Image 1 (tube, rainbow, N blue to C red):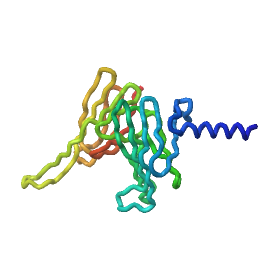
Image 2 (image 1 turned 135 degrees about the vertical axis):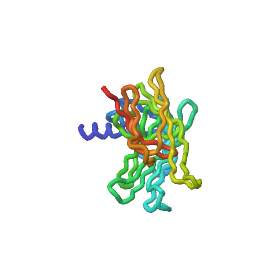
Image 3 (image 1 turned 60 degrees about the horizontal axis):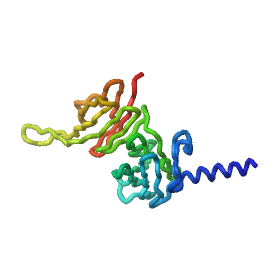
Image 4 (image 1 turned 45 degrees about the vertical axis):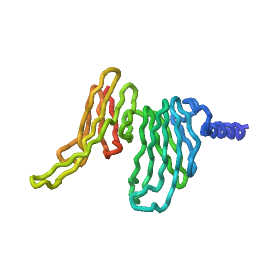
Length: 225
């Protein structure tokens, strides 16, 4: 009987991953949804108001050029007739810290990759405080009652008296909101030598900027008690 019961539970968990199966919190493990992926296009995932489409997964043991990732997942996220396309990639650079651009946040969820040799899974969970995440430009993420909009990135540079460029950096703007209160913050890129620390303090929140680029920011948000 124990063997039969175990097989039933395995079958139920497998059904969670099938397109069209209603995925609720009761069907997740510790509020985390894990969806095994295959190379190429994968079935859509329905989650609350989101339609998540893992459009293309490719794996290459030897990338075509040095900056290409070893694993990349193209991800379409649709909500209220609006579609956002993003990419999750993994690059094994033969160090203890492989290069990644995930978990990637959208709304109040984060999308991660779980990789074991040639097996790849998409991991979806609620965005929370004290967890680092990437967010794309133009997107809004939500943690409890607080939201962050990565509004814009403007490339700037400085010149010497002869008109020669001596430094280049980006200026970023993010809009923080909570209920009816909101405030815009601007800051320069991490490689700007005049910037000793990249952190934003607002109300009872503190946001650290861990990485920055023209297309994405890596943040971690703390909430003071």
